[in-house]
Image 1 (cartoon, rainbow, N blue to C red):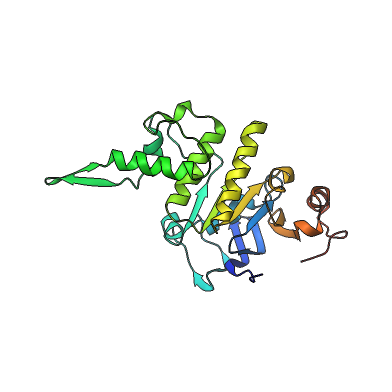
Image 2: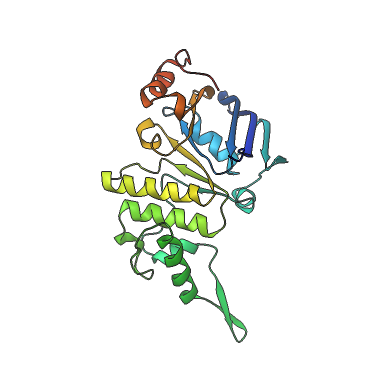
Length: 255
């Protein structure tokens, strides 16, 4: 079996917002082709940590390594250039635009006719449909509005978009919120397909039962502090809930 290699390493990450210390010396490592569950209650620091990794906030202390090289992301554009894509809880989709326009949003392919550039709508529709069907989802006509899509279909568009732009690390922020049981199963299947493609995933949630079926490893935060890290093979969902509730690793093999 091939040994896992580190894709991202966040070392001693600090972040302050005025007098509030949102993150305190947090260490997190993500392996290539791994699904990592990042867990904690509201206010635990999950979103702050991920926004630092995605280039939204600079850390006030600590270091970030990508492919063993130290990096500094001054904007989300910097993070995307390294292959880090985020699917936010409030999906960045525009209801009154077509599925394919949402898929490319800001990165649309163009074609030149004479001296003028136009959107290459045919290419947009074809590539959008190919990417989403690659996740096993039968997409509606790419020319239709996003407003007609279900919650699961919306997630498929967002995940397919990240895969199309050669993502290496996909960050999913509460991807199962407000989804039905059927849609939840569909999104989890999509996440597994992403891993099969060799992409690393950070799955953020406050609900361990959402991420437990697909993740191999779990990191727990509480009020800006990393309180635990366990592998699925060593722990049950109930064990992880106990760590989050008590802040103690007493019953779990520490990693």
